[in-house]
Amino acid sequence: MKTYEQYKVEDFLTDSWFLAWVKHDQPEARQFWNEWQQKYPEQRDTLLLAKDMAEALKNRPHNLSPDQERLEVDRIVKLTRHVSAQSRWMLFKRPLSRQSWLAAALLLIIAGAGWWLIFERQSSIQTATEKPVSVIEKTTQGQWVNQVNGTSQAVSLVLPDGSQLTLMAHSQASYPRSFDTEKREVYLKGDAVFSVVHEGKRPFLVYTGTLVTRVLGTRFRVQARPGETHMMVSVISGRVSVMKRNDWLASRKTPNNTVSGVVLTANQQVTYDASQNSYQKELVPKPAIIPSTSVSSETFNFDDTPAATVFERLKKAYGVEIIYDASALRNCTLTASMAGVSMYDQLQLLCASIGASYEVVDTRIIISSKGCS
Image (cartoon, rainbow, N blue to C red):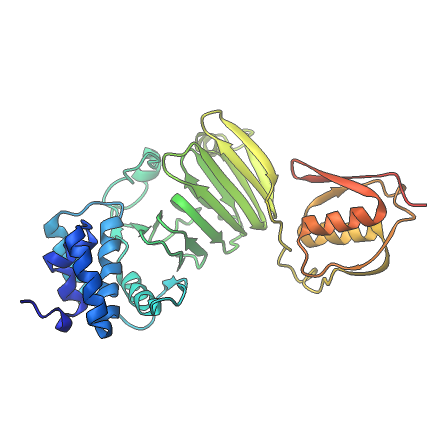
């Protein structure tokens, strides 16, 4: 009879009866371990911690053979015993249910040690969005790193230039250990938020499927799940351009060549449909105030304020184009406090108070009003 109550995490990870529950969900094993947790509640955290680790192995995008899995477990155990307290990985906090902070803490250590299949590239990225051969030939073998987040948690990491990348659940990012002197490149499969350090003329490029997003310094989000024909790019602050990768490569060969694509600014997004080769540009569902010193003191408190002034303050705060007839609104004023109210609700309240209406056309907001008496 095995003394499971004395098991450590690594003991569970190599136990066949434990794996029958976690990997294969065998009914008898599931019942046994559910009852065992109730019988030995003091060991429940250790058991669930081992379960989290085993599930991460099971759900990772690259299958491992049994021998490889055993080697991986041995490597993880060794690394978790020696990894330093400082790590450039940061795991977003889980809800504090069933003492999940314990599992999150170990996942943090494991992530810092290289849990998510961090390996050096010896050839091209073998995906449906392979790097162009011309780019591969210019890259020294072994200098590309692949980061795979195979968990349900978002992970934040620092890129070679100091830019921040938040890699969402079940997503993958690849980049060189040291960026090129002329450009910074990241290949993404899935969902990620970027906060890019401004570096003058050295562009930051994110390749997703058939698209490339080009920026100099900004915060934006890219969503491009493998197998989906729709890809989305949304801008939090700054400015980016989105275009087909083939067009981008062609523009590099002919600098004066006009490249088709879409330019986005804060609170704008574009959805690209690869099946139709079409772009749909629009405002994000919930526009946010642009992080800026000039609007950081905006309170949205208005006291007999001309409507035109209110619209101008909204334009400045959100970076959104609002079109209105100033002459029609010359007698319209607003007295209200709209702090903490979303932009669309602010527009709704403002328009209701002056007898106007608004509509969103692409990335513009059109105000219609007959004026105020």
